[in-house]
Image 1 (tube, rainbow, N blue to C red):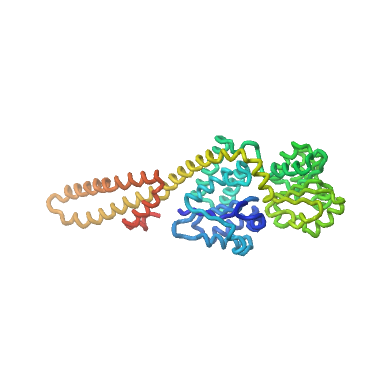
Image 2: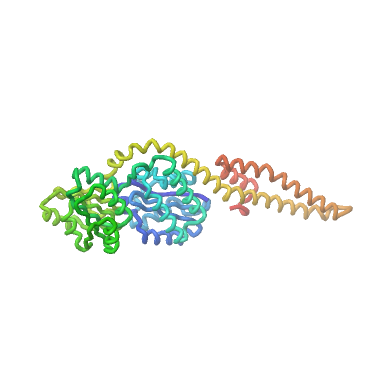
Length: 426
């Protein structure tokens, strides 16, 4: 099978591009169903977070889809012309694709090095693909290997030390700007996982008041009850923003919560007191033009880069140890896949090919024998069996050795060409 990954992340695409290519749960489910309709012989997993959108594909050699097909597929489902995002994409194939997957799930490719949220996000992506019928043996094995490797990285290295996340870095920014939060009113918009993680860190600074607002009020109430916060009505969002000093927003809305025009009435109501809005949602919850308002400080997820770099500098020394674990896991995964996809089928195809040729020659030879025909036939058949075993001994051993060297695919392909095994082995 050929494995491909096509995507963009916080390093290759700014938030304006990433929000165009972002897939919510419903959009992802529809896209995977459409993928299965287009390419029923292929597997696909779609991983979409605030910092990346990646489409993982496994398909038979020389079959569709190819990279160009995947670009067109992403453009169609994001309703975005390819020329507006293609320069922000990267793609990897085969072992490089598997290594990228393990680096992503191991958090070596994250905005916050060592964060653990990506593990659950990868599990969720695999589960969604399984429900859509697009995750088969290849990706169930690959993603499970990536999850196992991620656990090993977090337990055997110090890459996750310090409990740093995008949410905690966002709260750190608020604390640095205002110097103190114990006299500030904080408004949290959204009650998802990112919001909960951010609130956990926020409470350490003992803000004077915390209000949670969510489109589904019951979710806001559940979260507010856990932390002793207040709950506001989503319909009165402008009023809640006007009353706050710090706004942290991380919803899953497809469109901005407030346009710049609608927001313009808020600063005068506040008498232009400083307002910090940390928008960590993708797509963004606030129109970027809102940051032009007097005494309004708007930061999006890309603006957190510098703070993240300062926070995690001490983790970089753990990258080498983590990469070594990933290399080992990739090699093991390639060995398992090679044995499943190339070794067994190729050896079986060769053996069947030799056996069929032997039977053809026996059918020609046996009628021509004279004397004790039954005894001669038995001896010739025994000779055929012994010769087949000896012919298969060295190729089987050589293929097994090349599997451990990572060259099995090449050797298997050459053998298929030499012995015309295309109809017998996949």
